Length: 355
Figure 1 (tube, rainbow, N blue to C red):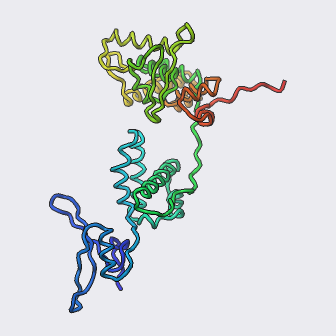
Figure 2 (cartoon, rainbow, N blue to C red):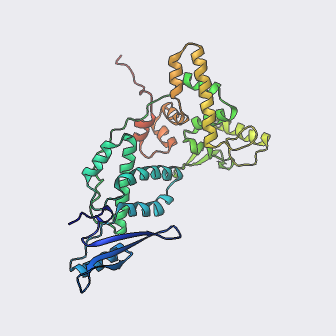
Figure 3 (cartoon, one colour):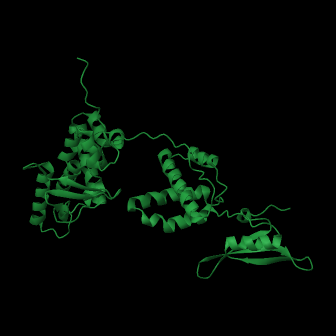
């Protein structure tokens, strides 16, 4: 017997898949039974274009029980991308699509019930991007859970319990020397963004999205984009205004002086909103100037440290410089202090000597 074509290996015996590209460019898929007519001559009997219905019709013709659903993962990936990913946050959508692109290369042609924990572990070991592999396995696990909800499979999630690659959290800490070097070379809007990020300890995207209308009754109201966590950050300390309050007052005054029409706090000198791309360019420029100056002063060690500094390091810098762990955790919007302590606190704990 001739071996089956790769396109039909996931189908029952004597069942054929035909794929046609219509004039509109849409691909049409139909299923056929490879049977015989009364004279014994080969005859393809149409089973329809729905795979599950086709399998039921195949079972009648072949006198076999209806095979269990075993949809190809490519179909599950398509449905997950169309129905689930659009409901996630923009950054998560972007990450999911990148992960899904890699998963498709390895698992698209696999029937959903054919994937084993061993196959997923092999995928993990072959991926060169170890951290990305962890994200991809997590996404695959969620896809299987959703597929179970959809009734596509009733098998146990094969990704459940698969060991992840070890991850080392980023531990870079921008001390005062590094901060001052970059801050001193920064444009006015970059300084504003750095100050606002430090005082609020929020993510870069949340800093850039802060608006003048978020200032209400001596509070800066924050709705974190990643977690939807809502915070009210005080702008005063008792009767006196605090550092964040002074910054907010200055930013509001700048808006009036520049006749800014958009609602955002971080704007350029000509009143334009600072986008993520603009922030990155300005930060890179200031960092390069700081590196060059450190090298001029024959301090390659400082230059190497400045080169590691990223805008996202301001959030853990703020968390590291708040003595009270509970306060730091609440300001960052964490529900678990352990996340703040293990990931964001990047300086050693203050302790007393024996004597």
